Amino acid sequence: MARISRLDPALSGVRTGLIIFDALNGYLHSGSAEKDAFLAERNIIPNMQRLLEGARKVGMTTFYPSGAHADDGSDTVLRLTDTDMDLGVGGGADKPIKPRFTKGSKAAEIAPEIAPIATDVVIPKRRWNSFHQTDLDLQLRARGIDTIIICGGSTDVGIASTLFGARDLDYGIVVASDACYSTRGDNNKFFMERVFPRMGRVMGVDACVALMTA
Image (cartoon, rainbow, N blue to C red; front, top):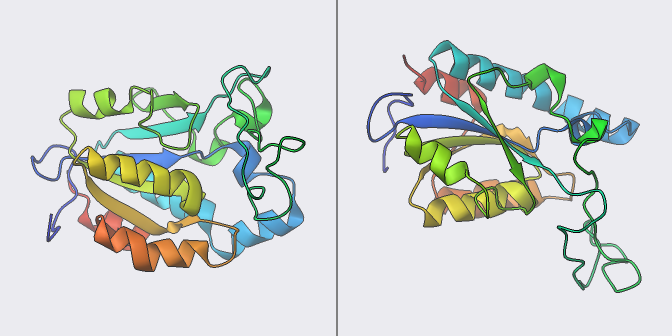
């Protein structure tokens, strides 16, 4: 995939699906003024909407890998880590990292601005990598999809983990850079400039939509 001239839902070699990763109320409508301002400054939700609109215009299927953790923690491993998710104190036996939202909660619902339609596919997941122990790979291959466009957050957590999985499954990769985000320092910039270009193509939403064709 040295050169992409089209992102097409039907053309072999670039038969494309859109992945909107963890676009949940709890992340996109957190209730935190600081987080909401961060996302608004970067136009994350409007950029996701434009990407989704472009995909739907050409009949491209959209996939929604979404955290679906059990409320009682039975599907979660409490790991011992050096820090919490934001590199602060935490991660030990007395304060393990836990999923922030559990299935069935309002926070775990997909944000209404980019909600799926009947032809889209919601993929419940319980780990960062959207391919791990889910049917995402099956759903893509059943439709003959060999290339994915991905957006969402966090870039340094689920997006990165999913893209490492996609690369090892030999999917073509396009990262919609201005529809991805991380609130952790310069992690988003690092992955966009130093990691993802070695795995696929990194481009803005406008460039992605321009390459979509019926």
